[in-house]
Image 1: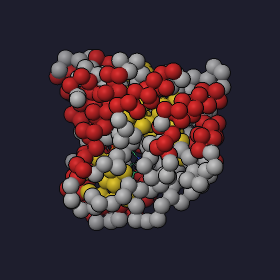
Image 2: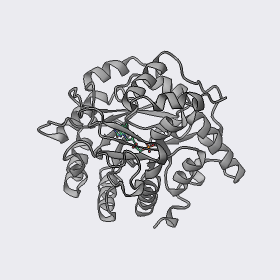
Image 3: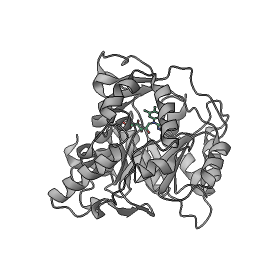
Image 4: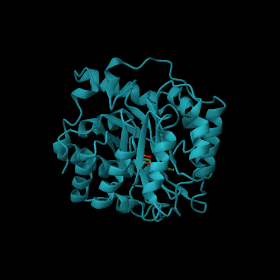
Length: 351
Ligand SMILES: Cc1cc2nc3c(=O)[nH]c(=O)nc-3n(C[C@H](O)[C@H](O)[C@H](O)COP(=O)(O)O)c2cc1C
């Protein structure tokens, strides 16, 4: 029985950031479901040089400081992305800075990269048991003199610890960060990163992008990513477009919108990226996934892997276990034997 239905009202009567700290503490205490079922073979795959038990990932932002990655893996996630981690510790924006949009099953956050800093997070992750795929998402300090150097610092700090690194240039809450997505800047940054990667180092590097870009910007990013041999794109971060949430409670808050209201925007961008890149670069679909059918749609739009955060808040801690079941049932019912068979098959249906 899913007891989340009964405890959700109490959680939702608590300030969202407090509720998040309570959730992390609860997980540390072992008060979380454990996925005891081996993933069905249809869900496992080898991609970006890594072996995934299932395609459902914990998106960045939930475990910013690397406190509970193995526990999240035990909850059924096929991979976990820790971060965003900044080189130096920083507080982030003043509170309150996370808001629930209950009617829309969305959230707005303007955390602004609150981080304990790279050294502390490295210490947390250094001796962890490797029981599944761990990504580290790196970013820049708000008061950085040179944001590009911050990414090099993050890469150097985590390249031996992480199974993959995500370059996050798409948070809307750090002034000027999204400018790194512009044509010249992205090329410069990716060249610096490629140059910094030790020779023969196969560490996959992913780039996380914003849903608030136009088709030309998307094409430029894809071209730069392919040229500099980036291993994949994560599509997408939160949006600053609030037009889809009208005037419901909290919709006026500044920050990035996530959850169900982001699903269409992020899926459309994902499908466009698949079409433009002709499937040449692996894509990770994020934005508004709450169940197996949402995951199925993202994969058919072009995602080889998916991630979620807001779905965990609204659906509860069984979300990964449930999506695994629902997704493998959908695949089998429709006669598919692997995820690869459906990646991008509906990408052309999105305008
Ligand atoms: C409270 C909160 C904090 C987040 N922090 C980060 C972050 O630090 N770095 C990042 O790349 N994305 C961050 N995200 C974005 C998520 O990783 C994800 O891209 C976005 O929320 C869309 O997925 P969802 O609709 O499943 O939540 C955050 C999202 C939320 C809701």
